[in-house]
Length: 283
Image (cartoon, rainbow, N blue to C red):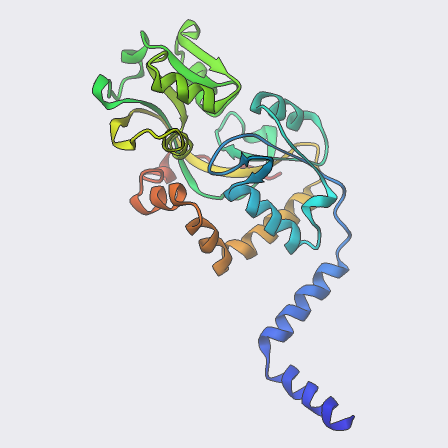
């Protein structure tokens, strides 16, 4: 018995990983349990999407990792997939509500509490390359029919920039709007570039047949909590997120989703991002 006890002590002393894991477990157990959360998301691949009845995606897996890091599990919370406009409105008012994935804008900044940043993104207007519509002047596109997802950042930015409302074709489904673009029922699509490419690829379109004709904003993707959620809970999520982001787990997760890793590797979503985004306030 003494020999086995001595062996255990020696392993403990010379195994920093064992000590770190034990310390983390002790830290988790000493924290108060998480309150029951309402977790809301939409169909926004490759970040969050339904594969049959299973919710998949980069951000979905990340939320699961964060909850496990905090000693919880997604099954202990109320998780729902719904149209973006509805999820967005609920997250504005309901306490202890987590919404993902959300593009940061200055106008949204004080509406939520922010956890991240996850990855760079570009909100862009995409059209068929054969149309030759590329321009730096949004006013030059004012005569086009541009598809949006209701209350999505693409739609919000178009409205904010004074784009004619009569020329915005809004729908609750990203898949439907992308299909409208494919069938030439709209001229262009305003959406996150990574997501637009993902949906186009999913319906068999060749990405080389499409192009960004105008950039609305460069920014970052986040998880957000409702403003009425306590700061302590948000801080715990942020700290858990940073532990994951600084580990090998984060890059491994990015590598699982080629649409994201390709965009980050080529710099499509991140050029000049520092000068165009406002750091979220976590007050």
